[in-house]
Amino acid sequence: MPQVFKVKNYFVSNTNIPQEIVCKIKKEDLHNNEGYHILLNPDDNCLAFGDIDHCKSTSEVMDILRDIVETFNIEKDEISYTHSLKTTDGKDDHGSHWVIPSMSTKMKQLKKIMEYTLQHKYGKQKIDTGIYKKSWFRLPNQTNESKSNIHKIMKGNPVDFLVQYEKNFKKCKYMPPDIPLREEDIPKESPQPQNKITNVNDIRTKVLKMTGYFDTLILGQNLALYYMTNLMEILMD
Image 1 (cartoon, rainbow, N blue to C red):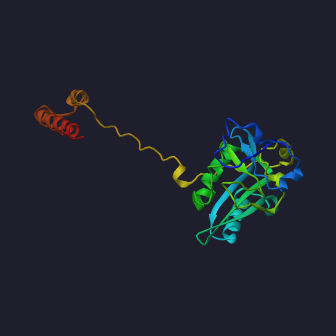
Image 2: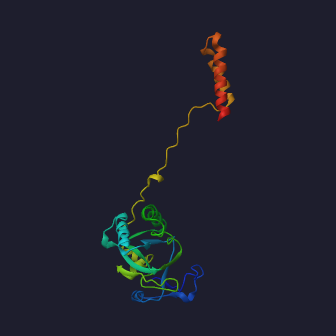
Image 3: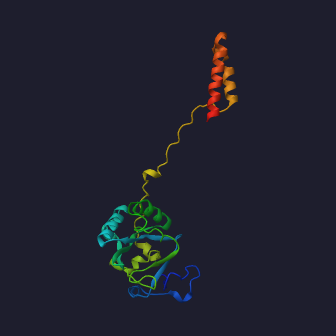
């Protein structure tokens, strides 16, 4: 089993980690509420996972989970997820942690996928991509001084949520899909530059080349008109 940490609140440093919060546990210990967390490392591989927040109902959470299944092109029985409920001022706030135990990825890639797809559709409040960094990640069945609402497992088992546990990668058979490009992300073609005369020397050169194209009688008039027209364009730009 990987190291887990008893995190009482989120003032606990994840850089200078107090030795007394480090735990070595067995799988069955994850069912006990001891404030267990893992420490996410954005530079390491991880299972595809995420955090859903601030939904008005369980059905809204389930709608997002169905979208996650579709986005990652998996079967619905391949996702593990929790449900949490917090009530503030009489209003219910539903959330979920989810994991795809059969899919491994890089955390930076996962963050991009979530930003380009689910967060783009549901917004930053409901699809939390702030978790994809070096940070504490609360495991199911756990509370602490900062979080009193338990994430109860609705499908899967506690070990699934050890998203950077090396032994979990042995079950992986998928990589995440390519990130779809949104219309606003497609590079726009730059307008082709026009052959415009940009300085007085260019005009003078053009005038000299034109001397063979006009009769002597009208040469002066045409040259003067050409010279003044182009000069005015430069001065007005």
